[in-house]
Length: 84
Image (cartoon, rainbow, N blue to C red; front, side, top):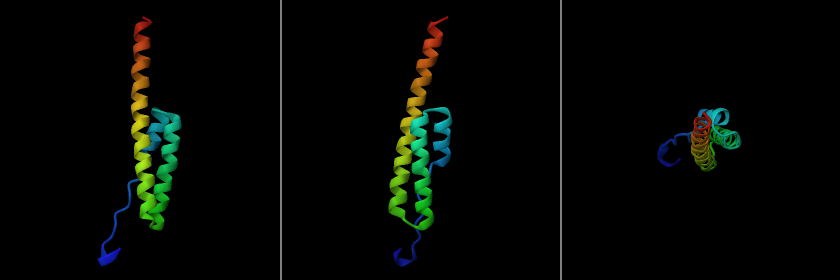
């Protein structure tokens, strides 16, 4: 970086990705874990553009996975409630 400025590492969202994989939406969670690891590896080697892109993708996948998980949970609860 110019002028001695340091750039902060892009967030990896790895914990959120693991949570989504286990609790919300398995396929999107796995894709988010892959992107999170890609962001983490790019942060380590100093490739900030790749890290930012992978971090952004992981965040989007996590948001979509969480929304899908919530929707599936609501549908499941509604189906169980109507079967009583």
